[in-house]
Image 1 (tube, rainbow, N blue to C red):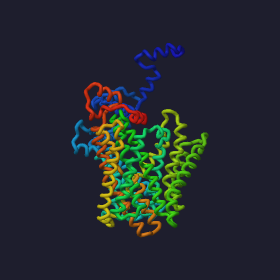
Image 2: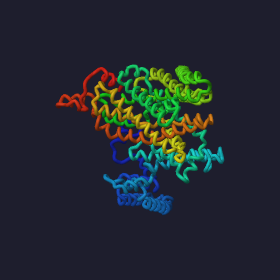
Image 3: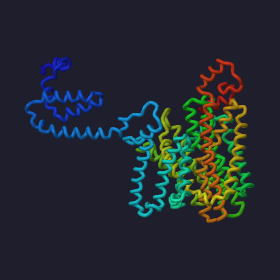
Image 4: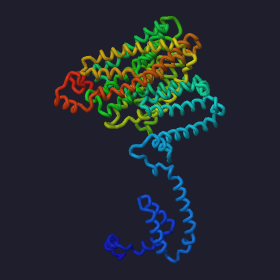
Length: 593
């Protein structure tokens, strides 16, 4: 039969009994293999009685010449019984043996958190702890005392771990994780027993790490600016991007000059710091609303995202100019010229570095993504740190931002339709790491004992007045855009969030003042940092909460066709958020989606 291939294959497909050669293999199975097969069947739902019956049957049909296997049977049964006893003992601790009911209680949820294998927040904390212990071991081997308690590296590592945990915990109550990181930093500097961590951090390392975070923020902002799409934005979007920000910055500058006694350059710099909204707060909330299809008929989430990016660019530019003016040396004419000159040099550097990145690395590079990322990050770092080294601090932020914007313009043209921005994902991953240092260190730089109550109170008053002016201007610039009153109020609430830019540039003035060792500049830099931290603590949770609560209530749900069907199917009033008038501005707004 084996000689005829077709008949033999037909025999193998139709016969019930296996061919002789397969019978010999089957009869040579050992007890261990049978035990493994039975164990797999147990996992598929076969009862232990059925397993025992099959084991008994296999023992009956065992060949008489299997003396070696029979001699090993007691040992195998002993091992099997030990495994079963161990599994039975661990059953209360295993998550797959203790699934949660459909409506678990709080106690059941807490118990489930600690079941094995590690999962959820407990597993997250465990993995972070193990990684940080490995890093600590490496640092201890390299730096010695620097990685021991009371050392700089040990304190930075503790700060990072606690900021990760604090951010994760506060996100459980639907608040921005950055708020938890900031609170952790403040506690590590001001709580007795814990303050040794905050006080042991080297100020130079703190400043350098915050500049590193600023570099990542500006690179992300530059990669996200699409020059082609910005040209197509309606004039309403541009008004919304620049007018509220500019009015708040000027208002804060005037109020802080008279309330806090700041010089005009310092007060206007504070206005630029407080005038920026926070992408770390607004972007997740707006993207969530967009995914749930709130406001997409009019492109409100997309419009706010685009306007927010331009808002940050304006504030960073103004901050760079005023920092250059404040810390420049020489007569008044040189001081006035040096600020704008630094900004211009930063833009020139950004264009040069960005165009260089169009051609380097070459198209035949073995790993272009890696080298592009390294060159982009290096160019940004040179702009931020190099500008400080040559006493042109105002050139750094603009140089970094311009570099990423110019480079991304060409890279975006080379990208195939539907191709993802892999480099943007790498920079986003870097932000997930450095944000813990940014907000933790900015909190650890605040010594509550040195804060004057008068400064804190007047700083909050200055912030409140600036927000009132910004809100009034935001509602005014959206008149005639096709948005109803509820949608205009939501846009105004979106503009309240402050965190990222305040943390990134709020402490740079103090760092420059510490380098110059001017006591008056140090005092004003400390006040600016304190007000920036107060703005984060107050505005970040308020902005996130307002967007989460009022977004689904004030924005129409569904796309344009669904909203039109709802409008044509019922008699609507002028206050209905689902109905709107067609005009040129709104058409351009939807094109940006």
